[in-house]
Image 1 (cartoon, rainbow, N blue to C red):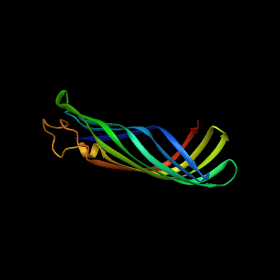
Image 2: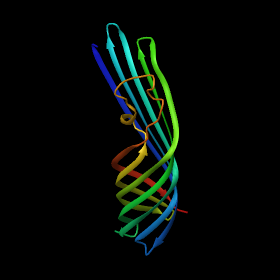
Image 3: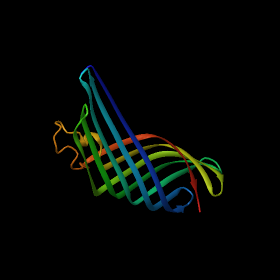
Image 4: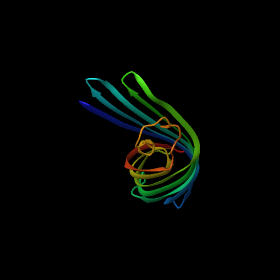
Length: 188
């Protein structure tokens, strides 16, 4: 090959609804439902004078389930506080994978699979809140997420391409994410 190009993209969306209980304005516990959509796309292109070779692999995890958690707060003023957060959940993971291998105009593999399995999510973080009005709160923080039982691209990539490539989802992988977050909370 004269040229190799590869691209790996991932996308994460999370939506949750919780019932919260407050104790002494410094402790909050919660129970709720959460939906997490995590997907990865990988493309490898091999280009030569004889043509273009393509390997494309996609995974998607749609997780829905119950979670519990709590916040420990430190009031900084009448409208602002700082704190630590922790959540844990168990989810049904509706996962799928697909792969496409082309050598020039010839399709070598075009397969996919889906399954339903158990996945989890453990979330820890630090945050700051600012109360805009009694029912709206702005929040910012830094979070750490650990997700076991999901399908990822490295877990799907076989060492050798064969007719069985992508005919079965491997969701025994785990993912560790961390980063900043901003958001708004609507209290009712």
